[in-house]
Length: 237
Image 1 (tube, rainbow, N blue to C red):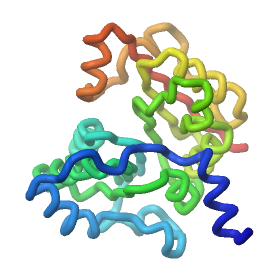
Image 2: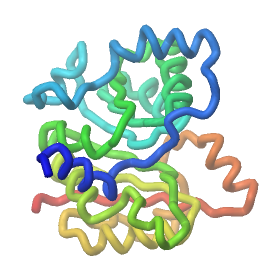
Image 3: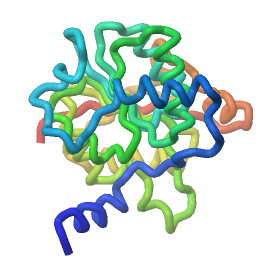
């Protein structure tokens, strides 16, 4: 078995699963995918950057990543509010990517770079201790037990996240599925790089300051599901 085949087999239980496409893109969105996305798209087949800063056109004071940004509502508002922070957004669903490109174009967000495939590849490619914060918001919970191995939160992927976060950086996780919240708490507790920062119930029951509610979260609340908002601080291994 070649090294590339071994790598693909290993990643098959670690990767960020997501739909690639559900409906045909309308003219503007297709134009954005064709013309704007190539200018912002990161390519892990290239040599690893020595610094994340080299991926952006102007100096940035901090760097953050959002894994699985969906329609981009949260990522776009964060990028708009923090123009001196460089953001990397990961989303394999092309319809969601097209929506995010619309936000970037409409609000002239020059501090966002994008990746449209397996998040594990981009995490392995980026330089170590580079990010101040990584968000994983409402990931697919894969509720059936036989699919739990597909959950993005795993010991190996937490190691990937810890590697690229700066010491004292934050891993933020939000979900309305209590089994996935408990799963994440357990995995982070068992991983030596992460420490849950909560000191009271409000620390995980209330949204974070300046939180941007997504359509998915609004729907979850309407249907009676209670979100949890977890923050873990990283420590050097």
